[in-house]
Image 1 (tube, rainbow, N blue to C red):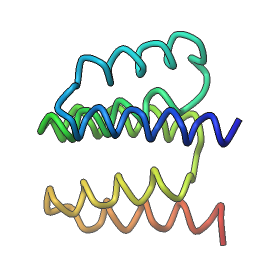
Image 2: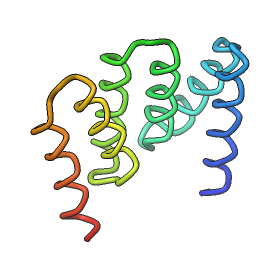
Image 3: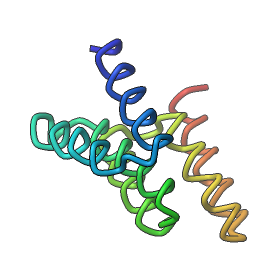
Length: 104
């Protein structure tokens, strides 16, 4: 399952780098439909939205993913980076602290 997730993430990122966002979104929507309880679809959507210069929507997607997988270090890092970019250092610190509390 981890290798499938990595493969899908790589494929989506490849499409995004090639400016083929329609292909990336087809995969993202398929993942979200097939596995609505998994964080992968929301995580991929977050990266796609970042690529499309929509940080607020990306944040919403990453937050939805984090709700499905609390304390995930990668999601927490991504959200902390978005918080820092928005000049919210305390929020960034909270994301890091919450992740460290669950993954010491």
